[in-house]
Structure formats: structure tokens, C-alpha cells
Length: 164
Image 1 (cartoon, helix red, strand yellow):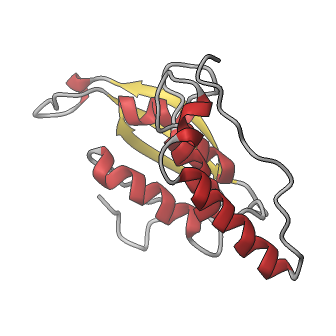
Image 2 (spheres, helix red, strand yellow; image 1 turned 135 degrees about the vertical axis):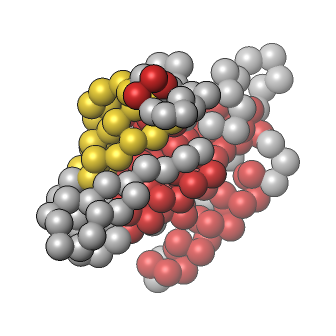
């Protein structure tokens, strides 16, 4: 729900991660940068946004969002706070964009995270051993070298020992 523009505050509520994730990334790509956003999401989505490495909810979403913003869990919102009550719990989070944003190409960072998070609870090596991944990384390296005007030399090969 958005309040009329004459008011100094705006409120919005996103439902489901199909809407929530694109909303967060749209906000983070908005220019000029906003100072702070207070948002309410389904609890599980909020926990993924605020998770830290090594915790149960650490995911590609949290890694990508936290590259561009500091995200803090503010409060839980019980089902009973709504009429009719929803089937899920909610949480309120604070999103503060990093200013200036890091000089990282999001597509490359997200591509690496897609590999790293593709095999949950598995060895990271397995993500790189997946069919086509090494070829894609080599092609990306050659593209980067060409953009930088450098000679592209592959310095090492990744060897995967099946027994390790």
C-alpha cells in the first residue's frame, strides 16, 4: 500500500518471494540511491536477506543483496496482527544501500554465486565440476582479458580428484 505523495512516508508490503526478490533488486538499482527502506516480508524471505555465512538461511539471495546493502532484522510480525490472518509469519527489515555501491558487475557476482550455491551442503568443488562450468569460466576470463586489452593466459588447470 502506498500513501499519497503528500505524506513524507511510504509503506509497501510485498507478498511471496516471486515478488519480493525482484522488488529488493529493483530498489537497490534505483538512482539516486535511497537512504533507507523499511520493508515487511514473509519471515523466511527476511531471514534469507539477513543471514550471515555459515548459518542455516545463508543463500545466494543474502550474498547478492548484502553486496549492495546492509540489511537488518527489525522485528517479527505475528499472523494475528492481520485480519484475516495470513498463513505465514512476517518480519520487518531495514535496508541501507552501500554508498557508493561496490564496483562489481552484478551479473558476474551472481553467476559465481549461482555456481557456489547450486549444490547445497555439498563441496564447492562439485559446483565447478558440473558440466559446462569450467568452459563458461574460461570464456568469461577471455572476455575480461579482451575488455582490459590484456593477453589472456590460463595460469593453471583445475584438477578434480574423485577421491578427495
